[in-house]
Length: 315
Image 1 (spheres, rainbow, N blue to C red):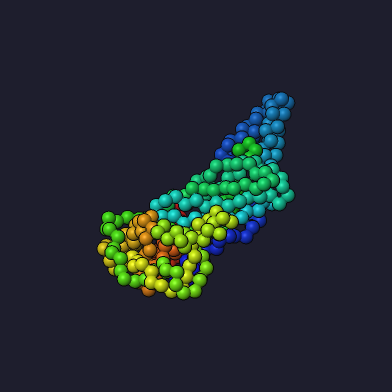
Image 2: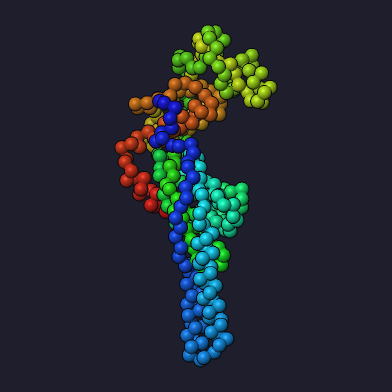
C-alpha cells in the first residue's frame, strides 16, 4: 500500500473567495410588516409622528441589509483537512477566515443546515471557525452544505456563503472482546545494529536505549532511534481479518480494537485484509495507515449514492 492517503485526501486547501446570499430572518420579516402597518396607520390618520417612525424603521431595515451583506463580502476562506474520527464520533470541519483588506467583521459562524457553530468576530489576524457535526458511518465521506453566515448587525437579515464540500475519513468503531492473536515468526523492523545505517525513525516503546540518537535529542528534544539494515527483528503480531468472526463491520471493528490495543502496548503488528495489507511496524504513522485501510475496506462497491444519502440525512 502506498503512502498516499485513501481517496487522495489533500493536506491543505487553497484560499477561496465566495459569493454571498442574503435573505431576511423571521425577525426581519416581522420588523418589515410592523413598519408597513405603521405606514398604513399614518396614511389613514395623517399622523406625522407615525410617518416618521415608520420611515425610520424602514430605513433601519434597509441599512441592516446592506451592513449584513457587507459583513461577508470579499472574505477569503482556507479550509483545513477534516480530522479522521471513529464511526459515531462527531466530525469537526474547520478552517481559517480572513479579510485581505484587514477590515474587522462581526459575528460570523460556520454552519450546516440548522446547525451552527459559535459566532465570533474577525480581526486582522484571521478567524478560526469550526463546527461539530453528528458522526457518520465508516468510510470516506463527502461533507456538503457547509456555509459561513452572519446576522449582524440587528438580526434582521441573514447573509451566507456556501463552501466547497470536504472529505472526511471515518474509521471503524473499536469493538470486540477477542484477545490479541499470538505472535508469528515473521520479522518486523530491525532491532540489531548490523548492516548499513538507514537513517533515524521515531522512538517507540521497547527500543533499546543504546540506539537512541542523543545528538538529535540535544538539538530538537525529540526522541529518535538509529535504523540499520540487516539483523532479525522480533516476532510481530499479524492482525488478520480471517481471524475475526461476524459480518464485515463487526470484523473491521475487532481489527480496529486490536490495532488500538497493540499500539497502546507498544507492540509491532501487521495487517492483513483481502487484496491489501500493511507490513509489521508500530508508531503513529503506522497506526494511521492501518486505520485508513480499515476505513475504506469494501466501500468501493457502495458507490457515491450511499454517501449522498448519509450526508442528506445529517443535513
